[in-house]
Length: 412
Image 1 (cartoon, rainbow, N blue to C red):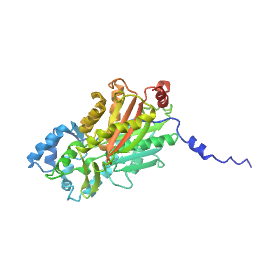
Image 2: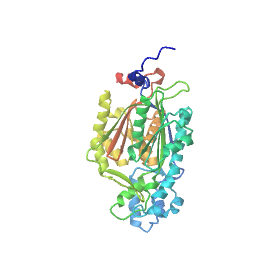
Image 3: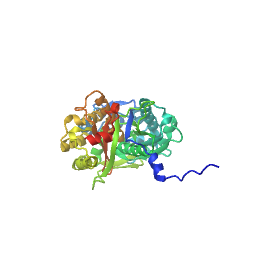
Image 4: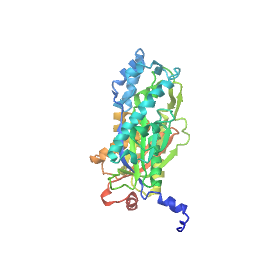
């Protein structure tokens, strides 16, 4: 008999299973429903579909609200035909329509998520079966098995893919999912993580109401849109087949703003989503706390760049939030161009939106539209809590020399 193997050293095993370099975004895919609605036409559609055209004063008020949201168009799964088939959707407070809404998203959300995922996988250039981990997040549903389970056969993933499903995280969900993916990629050598975020707003559709929640209802109906985003995250890019890292994820953090628990809330009711978003309180809370969150993220890394030296992926929760951040940080107008473009073209898609902004940033950089071609940047997302997700990103412009984020950091 041969000699027995030496006892395994747990610390050595753990070190060997970790990646050498930082997690990086390797590919991005996005998708929207086919139904595009122009914002200027939406008040007519909304009041007609909800049989509320007799509320002429409220309709005029809604038109003014729509003009101030910074949105030009959105994509919506719910059409006038679908809404006509579900009159119970018109009153989410008294009408028990949750089951019917969940039946719609059970099929539609995975299909939209799969469409975005296929685009990301195609850009990545490797087989779907090479995905080792799957992180899925949505506010649109409450199913077990969930979207993550359904994506396995839809995409041709291995049945051994390790799945993580995140429900009801609100607008910071996309950034939170990327934070989870960073940890998975860096702690599992060779891991390739597919992050998928998909949202449909049919769960929050309701008729306009004259009462205490009137303004909130109008903002919800005029601001939010439907979409899906997918990102493939991995460390130590391989040469064959060639992987092209786009952004290295250098650090990720989450902060709760003190005394902000009631600023954003969301819950399932018998008629869909209930909850509250304080249109006045949220921008102020973010403005008062954004710089501290950013300093907490950047100072430990030793990055001395000014705010205008960075590229910015900010969740465009509303134009008022972007305006507040601009004012507090004294940013140049072009720094929020990607966020404002996505808000204008797609509306607020909850956690999906930061993935669209990241894709828009990539496009702008490839076309030389980002002034100064900054290498360092930040992703910031906000959601219920009030929670702030902050992620420091490094643009992969030095691939030819093989320079890593750590090497560039020592120079900075």
